[in-house]
Length: 229
Length: 229
Image (cartoon, rainbow over all chains, first blue to last red; front, top):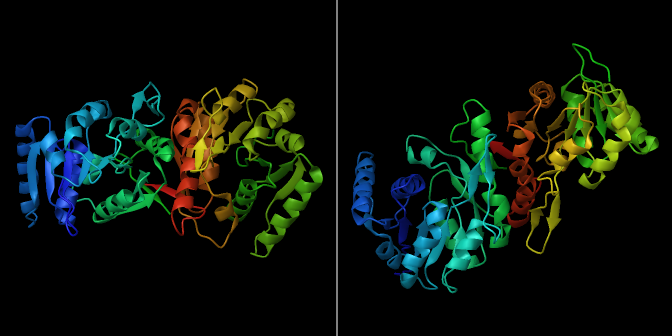
């Protein structure tokens, strides 16, 4: 990890997926952070990064946007966003653990969900929430922050869409949470709100299946976002 | 219960409490439904109704707003809102059960919560959610609808505050849910959204402690409301 008073380097692991794409494009357009797209497959990371760069250049933006295998992307970053499916989270953390330390912030937007015939339901791991599971898996000295949890990747990946929504932050390390709040706040139309320590995660993660159920049962609510006011 | 093509009679049981007060004042101001404030104590119901009427008259509104003991209020109503604390819900239903039938819709905004040192947490009954517990307690032929669940009674009880928020509806009886949607929609600035059957209640009820945690950890977010868009 590189620590620098003025620059926070951000790795988007699983950056080829929807929420990774959304964060790469929004951060690439709205902020100046050096970004690295991570993937288990370096070639896929490079292809995604090239595609994101090209879409941003079409809008007159030339982002600092590189690509690497997850383990290398994480080792060089100050903030590592685990934008991987929840069932890959533990495996991904074990892979990148050697490159993490107390100056690397691990961020996860993951939730556990299960579908039945009526809709989606929150299905947390036995420890209570996905973010607490990630905190247990991560090396002890690495601060873990829950963020970007309830966002629609599809909606945010379309840069023609102006957003006006909130992201809920969870974490036991106030400094780490503040750093992530600054990153989130750099995205136009996204407001970070504090929801306290990781033990308050259940209710945050349960909001994601609720949003998907609202989208299912109402017209014109696809990719629904939420605002607290 | 009185069924009438044009008039839905509404009983607000526990109508002396915050959410009952909010619904009485908003419905009294914005709609034409005959309303009855219910309480275990008829005198308390009458005092509350008199106070609400007086506040509405100060605004030039003369509402149809009566008062009765819970059991009598419910027996005469088409829509019975259980705006009582969740731990009184079962007892209240048992009291009013003789006056309910398949033309009375039972509505509940109740959620189960527990506080620890970090915040509030969703604490559902063993059946999975409070609204499912209410459905199990209610006579079999009485349709049950979850509504008004995540609203700030304090905010809504202040008629000087313009609201712009959503209420999430749960129910297995589509006709009953539609009737409640019409009632909710008659409140200015309140939009009903469907979230499907009662089995989808957990994620709706978990939103209430989340709102209270957001209020706790952020400045100027007291009595926070939510909008889905």
